[in-house]
Image 1 (tube, rainbow, N blue to C red):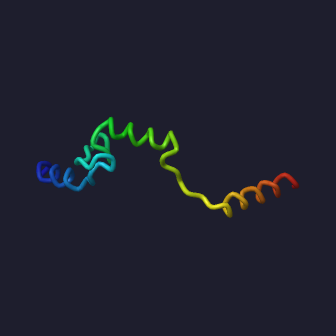
Image 2: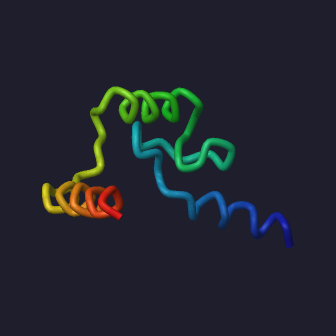
Image 3: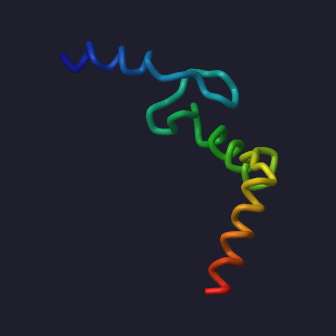
Length: 70
């Protein structure tokens, strides 16, 4: 039964988001260490960023000021 589960599990992995090759379980969701490192470099250099709105920053500033007054 493990043979039947293996191929279906491998085929259920999405392609590597960097190069499009089939993902490998060891480097999931990537196909290799190289693609994982490329993705990490993109995060570290600021190519990828999580969007934030000014309203979020203002809410944090206001809540921070309230804590200081107390």
